[in-house]
Amino acid sequence: MKAKKEQRVTISKIMTPVVMTLFLVVVLFLVNFQSFCHLFNRSSYECVTATLVQNTSDPLTMLIPMVRIQYDYQGTTYEDKKYYVLAPLFGLTKEEGSELEIYVNKAAPGHSLLKENFFRNVVNWILLLFGGVFVSLLVRRIRQGFRNRKKRRLQRRMKRSQGTGGNKDE
Image (cartoon, rainbow, N blue to C red; front, top):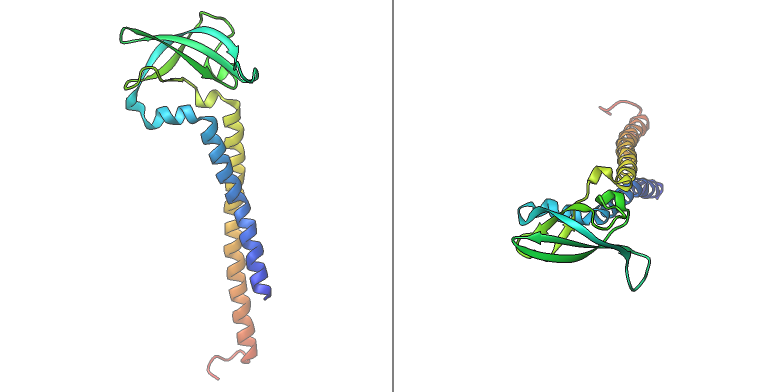
């Protein structure tokens, strides 16, 4: 009974950093969704320079920052609304008429992605730091689990050998 309780505690200790690491990976993916869309479909997007038409907020909630951009692709002018979290991460400024780089979908030119530098995002660095901490905790706990298992095996062998008087031939 005691061995099962120890095993549950060990599994719980190991699962904590695993769950936290997976949680951080999911958050990192969601924060950088546009970057990952471009990364996995790189051949479907082309880099284009867009002009910032209006820097405003979402008309319904008035809380979420939004920009209206205008860009030319293959002789046609497109206008798109994009939401963002922190303006400097996407190369946005408050000035209307400023230029920024975007990725335009070749198959559907009306769809574009803001060009984001992954390593300029402070949130990414924080998430990567926490992920590293949890992975190191996981590795330490797995190593400790192997050491504990080896120690328990040695203790069981010692008890068996003491119970038989230390002589294996008897």
